[in-house]
Image (tube, rainbow, N blue to C red; front, side):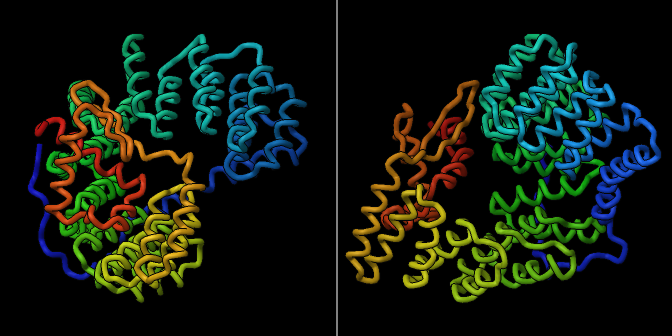
Length: 496
């Protein structure tokens, strides 16, 4: 199942071929469907005819995507036409109000329908899920008198989208008891839960189930991509790449999944080689592709490649960089000590900067002892994330470095006031059927002493962070602890 990783030294980033497989041309035609549905509805009404039920449903779906105000008028027309009690029409109205965040109106429409089938109930369930009302959604789900696989998938996807893999897997076990056969969406949700928890054993079981019941021919690109992502997240990059090589056909998401996995695991050369291959094959990259390439450039220290990629995005491929791309570009420059250039990148950004951008610059400022620029970066971080204690510690340390002791004390006082009710970073893994939860700074786990000792040894060996430097350690805000999950899983499995 595993395969040899591509490690060849990539040449400068390639230009696209003359006839690329540009997915944007397909998306452009698909995006016309909502407009056509509304135009058809208006055409029917303008001729003095009463629209058929399917016309109302299509037009209401279009309003959910493009026209909120028109949707309310359309709802009134539906009521006047007598189609409001219809379950399929009502489902489209519920979905419309859900897209507007108006759950009260959605529930009124739902309650007004005398006979509620699985389609209508699932539409109401999805309304709660899509608007983040998971507790309400679960109560509604438990009270449903008819639950098909679509309803189970709706609840599962809600847990996955909101970072609750434990609840998703528990619900999956409940689904198994009902003897309801999972479909592809169910399996995608289950694999996503395994990815979030680092549950390799369950992921392997699901892989076996997929091969047994679907086989290679029945496995869609989406399901194949989820398998690749799961193995990569669980630290088995070799298996992930083996599955990627065997995957046929591959879509853009397939290439992005593998490329990003290489980049996140520090295999920058492999990621850049993969990017060259996909361009030669005429596959048009998107924002996710370029984010992976920039991360790869950061890990390999290839400033020239990163600058070329950053320029190619807009000029050649028509992809506008977002905050994540700019953060990666700043990180590439800051790692090489090009702090002035990194600051110029930030100045050139047309949109509002976020913490990832200033955080990347701050790390470089500490590394290369540019404390004045570091003060600017740390000040922005405190403003952007006033709940993060590490931001205050870094700013205070910088003030001490430049001899401004009073300002350092003021920052410490502000930290005590602002971070009294902060929520620590949380990470969850599943090992041998047991769920382990870790919170940043918490040592309540019965093997925390061994785990922290091993992590400290690894940090020292690989120079990930100098824990004797309070400021550098403080830069590890809550999201950084998420990256330790696969490592902790490995420690529990093999070394403890």
